[in-house]
Length: 156
Image (cartoon, rainbow, N blue to C red; front, side):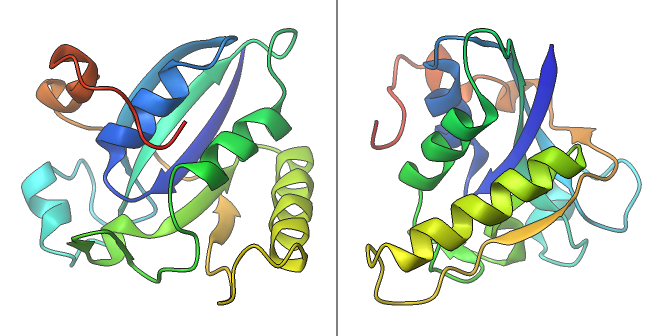
């Protein structure tokens, strides 16, 4: 199994979107990219820890490609909004791709450049592409939050 990690606003809807993808074997929501060790949701919501809300996706590469996962990522949020998605504002809601390998970095960069050149967005894409760092799993009640409530995912 391989891993991919994405930040696209509130992690609830993003996780639900990835859980619908054939070949995704597991998801976990959590916090990544900040300075505090073992942050809580309360800590991250202060917008002082530097963490992004992210979903870590485990996938079977024989069933779904990393490029397919990138397509899901691009469709479930607005990558031109800096540090916000919808009503959620703060650096914890930033658009980010955290790569696990040089191949993922290359694919993410190419995907971002292709989308920017497509003309789909009038504003520049502000998505951060950075190496994965320590992942801190979010509290249990955040895991599969929307699925537990029978709510479908974002825009798929």
